[in-house]
Length: 233
Image 1: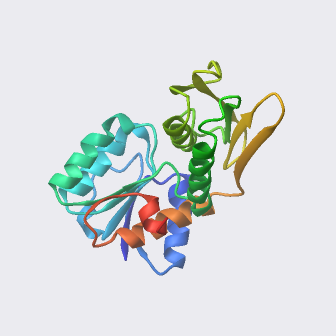
Image 2 (image 1 turned 90 degrees about the horizontal axis):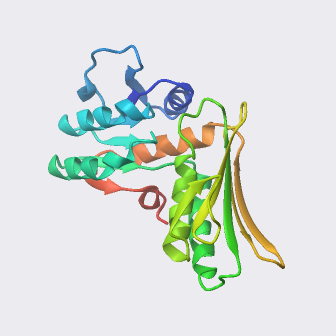
Image 3 (image 1 turned 60 degrees about the vertical axis):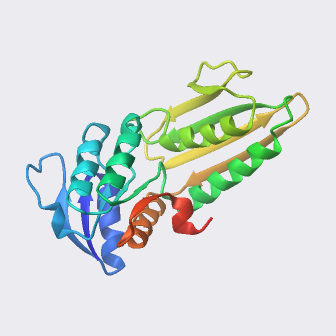
């Protein structure tokens, strides 16, 4: 499989190593200094760029018939437009806020727990996410995905960073600490007890491996998919 890497920061470099170790060829690498490239050399593109170029990267893939796996966060106000373009061009697209296989299992646990807690209004939900200081968005896309699932099934109307009213919006505490790949905690607390679920990433390899597995799965498929489709969840 021939892969285009759109974004060549720490994640892009880790994806490159894992993709090559799985027998794939990196045919295009795009970083902040790349002016021109031919995306059609690739069977699939993996986008871990930055929010202000993600839409252009994804659009370029669809317009040239290249399926794309995107893990860039912070651009989702344009997500519906990208879905429409994908369908118009009969492309293939996977977006996930987190490609870690373990995190996607964590998403399912979070969803099931939220359903179980639906009618237990005595519990208030708080969330915490910890990442390395280079992470640009706050809170993380993963934390937002977790919060949206809880909101779907419980009394909450939205989420806020740090200063939320627990009865209305879910407070998300965002911490930036050196060399932390990603830790996410969801806590339900009442006057008598607490229930907590937590995922801790030990390194970036889990995120990169999941992205490569998603790219392998997406080749030759048409439509808009999620990691639930990739993992058969």
